[in-house]
Image (cartoon, rainbow, N blue to C red; front, side):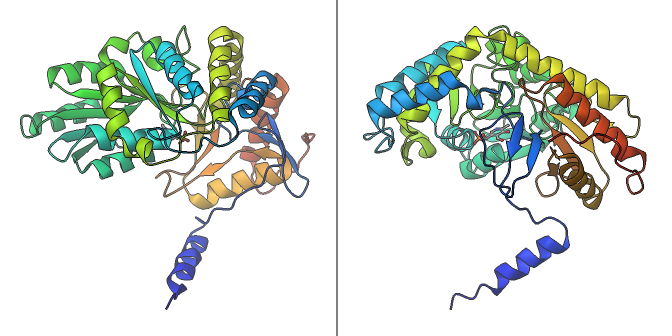
Length: 401
Ligand SMILES: Cc1ncc(COP(=O)(O)O)c(C=O)c1O
């Protein structure tokens, strides 16, 4: 009875492969620096707080006043007692921000993808999905029971082959892709995907999680930046990255949103997000709409970091400059070694991403708008030091705490 030997075996196996993860406890608010339990202070290069809004005083105030007025708990799922006027306002604000007719708000981006895919796609349908799409898309497809076709990453030739091979075999066809890929920081060939969707009569779904707030004149995402919104009427976003809080959404035509309210199980069978969080997101979207300077500073930092690292010929970087900068390594041991040294010797939190999250081990660096130029230059120098001679290099760089 209750024999957990198999759990210990699995944990042991993860440890042996260098794949066992540990949680780090943070004592301070989300920002460019983090103080950790045990007293260590580190430069934070592992958050998705792109615009630095996670700790913005006006958002904190909005959170507090929403809690004072509506309480801390939403008291039920959205279809029961969990829809306050703030939830309604937020969905309106999201639709306006995204330039769509309507929007539905979920408790996370994960819940949005899982809920939307499982509600809209059925086992009689085909779904074409980029091999590097986020785990929540993968799980949503599994739940939908649809016939899935995984195309090689960003490879529209391969996508078209699959579309052609499966033409007319299924009731409806969907193409789903991230717009900015979360673990590689590269961007999807959205224009080509739009053409294929039109040619093969597919419905498209684009996950703008890492683009919301940081691309486009009105900051709504990459589709806006590329002027492709008309081809992609249905989009997913999160409030957990540039917006700086939590929650996810789907924005699109009214009839789709109405159906999602009636059919998306992660919306229907889960307590709605607290009014305090909802009020905070409303304020954050307001600030994003009003303040392009944060976005500009973020991009300045991303470019500075990318170009600085690029000068170091030993580092293998991703191809696109986005605020997700990846340095690839051949082995898990190597990536762990560098990430550990950055952390312990240079006080830089630069997370190693390894299997099973990704196939190819990498350090994923995410500069944010509130990093200073000195913070960025320090990281570049740290990589220069580490890459020269990882074992023998003496530490002459003045360590920042
Ligand atoms: C592309 C993508 N979609 C969805 C999600 C899930 O969003 P959330 O963290 O808000 O649940 C993430 C989060 O990492 C993501 O990167």
